[in-house]
Length: 426
Image (cartoon, rainbow, N blue to C red; front, side, top):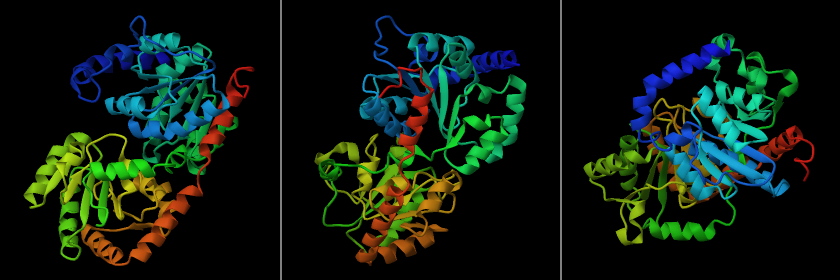
């Protein structure tokens, strides 16, 4: 019964409120999160009104290719973007030119979601990955809004929890009009959880469409200067690193310096608040270090820490060889296809549970999985000695990513078919 979820959500909210009000990633935009919008706030114009929700910056980047396709097909549409985290807000405002409105998503409370739906007046609500919010889905459905889930995925380890929750609250999947799933396996999981068979489609993952950058050469050279990188020296880049990995990477780097004394290291942590600690680790290791935000005036250093949002893809283009983090610790990996799309050979550790589809695309075609830091050192040392092989692997990696694009156009086609007649006209 849905009433059970309504009561439980308010109870949990009361207990979580001190954290929500103080957490650095969640404490901003409280009024918007309650579905309260200040008088005079521009909520966008145009029709149809499409509300796309992604929890974080990474989720929004996966939605961006769909936004572009929507604007191409429906130039008069109004695209509303909501996110949960502050970093998502910052990235959306800086990078998503297609978004007409950027707001914080409402808490999944009965009142907050009803107020948000009434104020934003969407024709279509698009949720990302596993963003199944029962109160929001119910409020949208009662207002006559069509609902789609894109890049759909359900963690197989949590299926029993989903089933138990859905039995207790009346299955919210039955109110979703269209499931656009990443793979056949994900489609089977959606069906097993109660999605109607005639509403489930396998269209692929739009994150693949967001990977290849066009016309980035000018930005690439500007970023190289800002980061103080020597264009004549190789660059080893560690992207999306997590707690416990930077020490390992710095150790590998010091080993590589014995053979390649001009090698430069760039570390891009997954969470920017850890940049200070990474700098301290580099100093402790006896290495010169600087922040990218210092600009060209900061000069050159052996180690550069990328402490800005939205520059990772372009920064990958500066690398000679890339290691992607989240894979030497039990975080399930990070996006290995992003550097591959920039034509770079990609190394990654053993823990890639959350990116199995990406590993399947890349392994043996420009991607190499290593079991330990010691093996990373050995493989990196060998590859850096063979520039021709590096170039060949990079071309293979880029080709692998290019071959799997197109999910965004397929998703938009399904989404347009859901809109009221007249509003979906191209």
